[in-house]
Length: 628
Image (cartoon, rainbow, N blue to C red; front, side, top):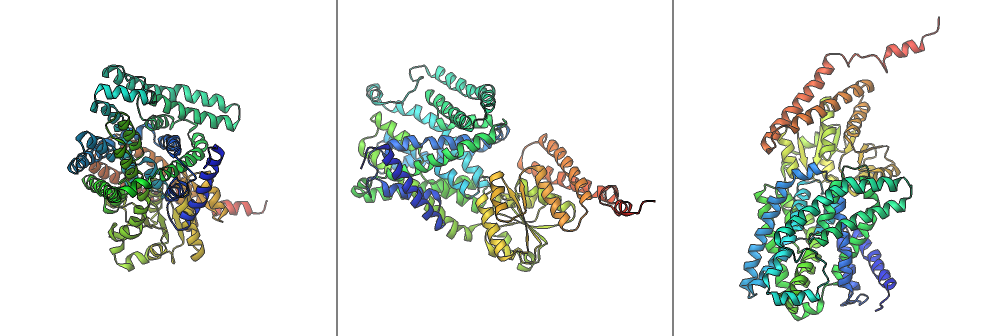
């Protein structure tokens, strides 16, 4: 309606402000709210946004770049290296399997083999933006599903480089020359021999690593001395833009370059500062990206070929879902995690827009084929949040792990004085320290793969979503003294807090907070015991729980220091052991037994139990005795 950038900004922001809160009000994903806003303001409904929607889409893809950089900041280089087998194994199996089956499908229905190959490449890619945003919203990043999804998406971001290199080989030199005249893509290495291109790509990755360590960190230290927050924000943007541009120059994925830069900077002292400065930009650009996807859905193409479009959308989702389900089964994911993976990655991703447009420029795809596949891509992305809601509310409750619920009700109902929600790294530390004192907790976790692993290591863990009041009541919340939350999703923690405070105000809440902002929100809700995460904090949290249950504070303090020492020693010993899953389970189980035995011996020796240094009766008597 108007060429003004200010008018476009008003339209997009208004659409987001109206649609996203409505979506959240009905318990839907914010991603779905953004997509619906884009559809409404797009050229085929209200018409506020016209042909410029595609340009906005390309600009907003920078939000995906920022998201990968921020995820990289959360993964240290050592952890990234340990993920290599999962990335190559699960990612490679998914991409190769999807390409083979989709290629056969499209050639069968009459497409040229070159067109079928291009489309199969696009279909094999899933949406990094939609999948990871949904995972983070639901607090599933640290689950088996979250790690598996991230590994597959990261492999896709890497393999798209090879796909872009292969596409020009599918056309003749004359068509390539024509395409080059119409392409504004800057690629410095296109005329170099293949060996030099590979060397340049390798050197660019090395440059990212060296720049992160020897240029960006000193630059940030220099900027920090100015004490100007806006300069730190500008520096954070500069780092991401520079990394993305460098990767684009050598033909790599900008998102992949940003991710590598984030991994390199994950161990720097500016990790949290970078996160806080970039998070608002990432959220805004991702919202803009989702709205641009919604606005790009061409309803004229759908009206001209409704049966073909709807058939392809269904076929693509079903095809990808079957491959993902099979990959999950091969890698031994539990039923609920496998279903989350199957639904979460069953769409075509944003990089398909790049592949399909590039193939069109090279005259491999014609205009009809391009428009059709762009619509199919956008529709699969739009349907993903809806399918996720159906899976979460209708399928998972019937298909997920049932081991916890199938136990006799009185066994879980009598339970213990303490309920522990979330048994990841933080929660397991709390639970182990409590158990070293003979205090058992009723443990709940929503990752069935983790539940299975922890049971093999000797823990009695129950599968379930602790934000459901019926599950909490079956776990004995009415009789419990303390509820300890060790989950890392702030929305779930706040929901859990409101629910328990309203119905069971006498239950003491002890809550984990991932950062200062989450702690601030929980303190404002009247929760006194909030713990920002670390090894020491989780041990302190368990110690305060023991003190509340009547154990001596000084005894707890001494045992806590020993627990931390033993845990650090155990971690170092485990790091030197072979990394097979079975041997790790066996060694970890033995280390836990040894650690608990050492702590028990410390108590039984009497060194701590009868230590009268701090809050002893002798000191109080001496203090209160009259002077002679």
